[in-house]
Image (cartoon, helix red, strand yellow):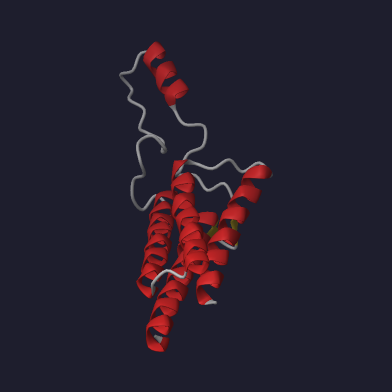
Length: 153
């Protein structure tokens, strides 16, 4: 039952991300990276429920949730300019020695959606913040499912 909740939580987060994308909030590279572990957690949860896999496989779901949580915390730091993001996803410094042609090439090569800009926030909480905290909660549910299944076995 807890595994179903954890997998459904990842499905809910993934559906929410896709809904935001559908209404016009294009994802950056870090946003896309955060989606993959959720998809993995959904597949793991469905496999555990469908095939009655051993209890330790719930730890794989927990690992997926911790991975996306870590990416969410990293993305949160990039958004707040606490640390640098990937070079293909953040703004770079413009050198004053660039020619006009080089500057134009740098502008054209820049990503359309940057990871270091906050596209949406409510009360100072961004989508990356929500993913970081929510996924940490999901990791706790995966762990709880693992521990509960070991006690009942």
